[in-house]
Image: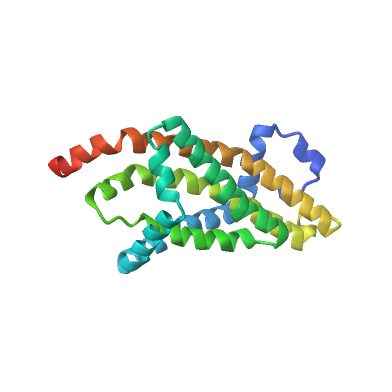
Amino acid sequence: MSSSSAPVVARERIALWRRPFRLIRDNSRAYVLIAAAAYGLVVVGFIIGMLFPELVAARAAALEADGTGALVRAIAASVPLFALVIFAVNLVRLSLATIVLPSMLIPFAGLALFAYWAVETGVTLVQTTPVGWVALIPHAVTLLIELQAYALLLLGVFLLGRNWIRPSGVGAATRRRGYVEGLKSIGLLALPAVALLVAGALWEAYSLRYLIAPLGRWLLGGAA
């Protein structure tokens, strides 16, 4: 019997910081598939954007229309503020509003919503200028970090939906108990996910502020 089916009392003996990693190990197959899908869908969106430049232009126009572009330009000069805003957006709008909260109402809903976001993000990543392609180099590191955080939360909502629909898999007598066990899984996986979101926000803010210009001069010379 895997530890995901073990009594809650047995799991309580594991140190708090180790429990998320134990949970990932016990559900390693689901985690690998979810992480691969998260990265893969962004790549799919990127390929779509390369094939259909009009979609890239439409996304750029949409970001300007909803104020995202103006907000970034307004706060980019203050790296701590920029990092804080990035973290808040990634935590509230994507992690909570897109992945976690919908899945608490409808099983696995966050998986579908995230899939749409991932493809759309892939389209957005396609650049139209040399400087934009240079900026994509450090931003690719940001994407690797943040997608890893989202993969952890996606694993959490997958476990929530599975435990909710099939509570016997975690030794729960009722769907309500299975739902509670699923929420606990999300809570555990949120610990490393939030840490990754903090790291990603700091890297994105500092790299965009201080790395793009010298990298552009090095790669593009006078064109930067």
